[in-house]
Amino acid sequence: MSKMNISKYLANLFLWALCITWIIPVIFGISTSLRTQSEIVQSGFRLFPAEWRLENYVTILGNTSTAPIMRWLFNSVFIASLHTFLVIVVISLTGYGYARMKFKGRDTLFFTLLGISFFPGVVNIIPSYKIIDIFGWVNTSLAMIIPGLAGMGNIFLVRQFLKGIPHELDESARVDGAGDFRIYASIILPLIKPVLIVCGLFSFVGSWNDFLWPVIVYTDVDKMPITAGLLLLQDIYGNYRMIGQLMGSAIIAIIPTLLLFAFAQKYFIQSINLNSGIKG
Amino acid sequence: MRKKSFAPVFFVGPHLVLFLIFILIPTIYGIYASFTKWNLMNDPQWVGVANYKTILLDTTSTFHTQFFNGLTNTFIFVAISVPLLIVIPLLVAVSLEHRKVKLKGVIQAIIYIPGLISISAAALIWLLLFNKQLGIAGNIFNSQVAWPATQPYAWIIIFVITVWGGVGGNMIIYRASIAGVSKDLYEAAEMDGAGANRKFFSITLPSIRFPLIYTFVMTTAGAFNVFGQPLMMTDGGPRQTTHVLMMYIRQLAFGHGESIAGMASAMAVLLGMVILVISALQYYVMNRNANE
Image (cartoon, rainbow over all chains, first blue to last red; front, top):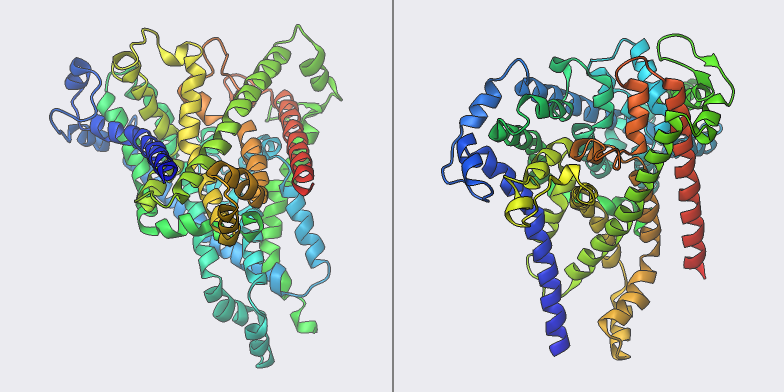
């Protein structure tokens, strides 16, 4: 029994120590964003403000020239939402095609594409930029919305999910004379909702947090998403001249994904159950 | 039958076009560009293996120095971050299985959340937290140096933010896998008097070998593409000791001055080959050991 107790204390100690370490930066960022510059500089490190002030947020939200954060937020929301919507459309259509339709070379085509997609993405970044440039998409939202739709990962998940659903429903509809589009829209779409929600959530978060690609394709401050914008802040609020504003901007940038997690936590956590292949 | 023949084009066609334009063509073109002199604007000029020769053999060239410095730093990042990103999530997942741990959902959520935070936002906060005057570096650790500009602290802060952001994803995978292991196995082992360690090494680990292989391969491949953490935390310093290969590739292709995209493509192809070879080796070795 004493052995059980030791392991109980060890497990709890480890987990709570980790949790406290994990949450400190978030608390520190929020609290610093609510302190004035003079208080921060004079009193140095503290986890909670002596006085809670909202002035930094007024300054940040009022900046529409060097660091237009409302503009960046709007850009990010627009990019991530439209990208997510299109991901759901593309993967459901394509997943249906590869799982349910009969055409020559279907599986060969699918596995060829899947194999090619395993090739390291680092090689295609530079030519992708050139293609975006040819289309005239540099410094536009399309540069971030469209290329990500080409991926195979989510289509693989939808196809796997569909393989687990018996064919009886769509076959009886087919006997009744329904075409592929009717079957897709009225039978398959409702059935694959769980996998679409999970893929949609991860697409949104992935698009919101993407960093390398926006840093490459945006030079126009007004067109950037917020992750690329934050890179500029080091120069604008940086060198520790306007610390509260710097922290406030970071906090504003992380609120949307945290809200999403708060409302859809179970989908994030259970996502892995969809991928039975890796669960083992 | 005849009227159906266009339906697959409607369902599969749009993605196929996207795949060609944004994956297949850029990948082939990226390999082709590595054999050319190219500034992203004009047509690439074929130069054969000259770029590779310069990068790999010409010790007087800055490209040679940059490539090997970048590759070394990338390997350092992979060698230290990958074990941490496997072992810590595994320890968390096993600890969360303990019967006497309460508030499991809360703990899991707190550890998962940093994975949803963008690197640029996270880095602004962590940099201030590690600041000498205003954060914990000077006030708690009594350190008199600037961490992002001094080794080994520059590496340490990169690993801290990487582990902080990366533990949650693998933890979720391990938790789900461990939950799938048959309870009968543990009960039988307890009857035979097996302790916690014995149960972990003889039952848990072998039962989750596929998720282990999967996360090991994926985490490693991801770590080779490291870019955001060193760019934001140290900007490659001090004296380029945390300057990783992705940063050089971006600099050469998209930095100030004329683009050197051909050379950058050659470095990208070399990095891609390193990733492919290592992923294949990992998969081969681990799968063979797992099947014995």
